[in-house]
Amino acid sequence: MLKVEYYKELPTEYEPFLVERYDSFLTNCRYIEIYTPNYDLNFMCVYQDDKLIDLLIFGNQGDTSTCLNSLVDIDQEIVSACSNKIFEIYPFIKKIVIAASYKNYLLKKSFLFDTTNDFIIRLPHTMDEYFKKLGTKTRQHLKNYKSRLLREIPSVKFVTKYKDEIEEGMIHKIIEMNISRMIQKGIVPAKEIEEKNNFYRYSLHYGCVAYIEIDGEIVAGCISTILNKRIFLQVISHDSRYSKYNVGQLCAVYLIQTAIEKGLLSFHFLWGENDYKKRLSAIPHIMFSYCIYRKYSLEFYYQKVKSRIFRFLIDFRLSKYSKPIRYAIKYYRRKKWSKQLVVKGTPDLSFSK
Image (tube, rainbow, N blue to C red; front, side):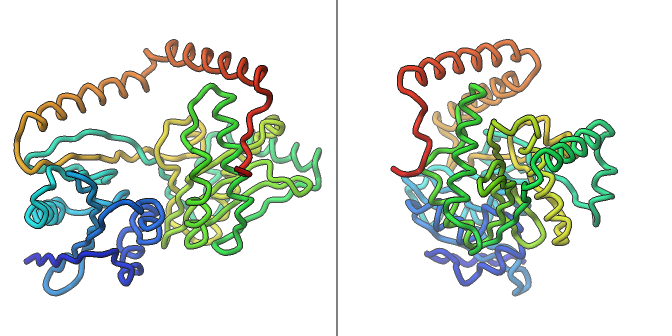
């Protein structure tokens, strides 16, 4: 029989349990205290036969409560029991958001509002085994790019830093390159300059930064998080001046090598459709996000219909039929942004502000 106990705070004393139970870079106290400072936090311990089996953290904001356990696998019965507890304790809460669950639920008064994929590599024991998983062309290309890089720039270094070894400037440089690359490709950057401090603060706890350095300058880098036996790649970027060496992909493979040598079990590229993830043998694993309402209402049905339209548009955007439209949008953005560069000069992407 399940027993649910409610507490009003961030469960910092349960951090080891959260790391061991969920292996998620999103579901731990360090991440939550850095990235969700404006939430009213509470948590619930779930026991079965007096043994702690789950711990769900909720953040209240306005009339919405968000379950902060993401990239996790939690039974429907437990999600339902904790959601009912939230509605019971907080009469002003109208809906609860469950985001990025590896499990598909059939919950009452709820609807699925989003799906996305986490691209995962199940890591083998050695790099030889990993390379056997890759396609013949991919293996050959990686070998050729690395050989050319080492031959033409023998001073190149492959470096890995962990936790308090990570310097703020490393994080800044990698995010800076990421933003610059997105702008060059006509894509609205997913990362914002303001995020730099959060990335750095979180890296000090569970961070792993792998980068390629030439003459003291970072030319490609990966910001990742290691939790228990999983590694999560959050940011990857490279300097466009070294694209001919494919340093971005070489850096990703170097991080995969680091993970294998540390005996990790899985490598998570997370969400976002990119061909290089599949080339590097990552397999998509679907994640589900839900809205649970206190009661059926006009808002419930309106949001349900709205979410279906949104998901249809997302599916269309990712389909082959939308490629001409996507290319046209990227071309327009590149033209627009290039004109802005001519007028304003090179954009200030440094973190000196």
